[in-house]
Image (cartoon, one colour):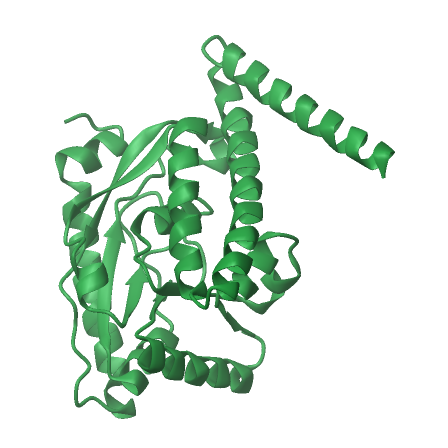
Amino acid sequence: MHFLLLYTLYFLLTYVLLTLTLFAISPLLPALSFPARCLSAYLSLVICAIYGVIVSLALRLAGNHRLAQHLTARSFAFLMRYTTGITFRILSGEHYLSSSRPAVIVGNHQSELDVLLLARIFPPYCSVTAKSSLKSVPFLGWFMALSGTVFIDRANSRSARQAFSGAADEMLTHRQSVFIFPEGTRSYARGPELGGFKKGAFHLAVQAQVDVVPMVCANYWALLAAREWRFRAGEIPVRVLEPVSTKGLGPEDVEGLCQRVREKMLEALKEVGETREGRMVAGKGA
């Protein structure tokens, strides 16, 4: 046990020193800012996942575990501001995230950095959906399970329907919102683009008869591009759109609802990219 603690301490010290060294050299060799910020981001994620497990356990004992993801998300956003220099700023519509509770919140999915986007926009009493394989990831998976994440088995459509049915019950009983990336996977887009939408989020919203709250994040390929070894500091603009009602809609209306929301989001994504903040992120100047 003593040896294990010493080994862990040695590993952490080496990890931190390596990260600081890369940051120190990066003004001379800009490409080194990529591994420096990656190492910082991974360490921040692990720290906040451990914190999340502790918070989730404490809140479960207090009977209020549905706040765990919000509190952990905010701690991650705060830490990442100082370890990577990346922040997300909501330009408009932030009040829709809480005023429409419960709701199905949907957003565009660009890269792994969207974990930080969630950390910034996540309202109280909201949970995410995630691949069932994440359950087995140490600390992160434990935190997600303890804090009420809805896990979806994408290889099993029957299991997915059951999970969404459980989510609808949870939303209505506890006024719990759910966040879903309807594209289903990361786009790694180089511009204001959206992939095709999967219908699960919209089936869930119709089943629960709750609003869909769309939000868009400006394209940030100019800040983060793994293949180009680029990871820069910056402020990324976000816009939350007006909620879309599902009152009175049935399963036959899901296709049309999905298309309407996607069109609204694509239009807003192009608009936010043309704001002063969006142009700065894209490297186009003000």
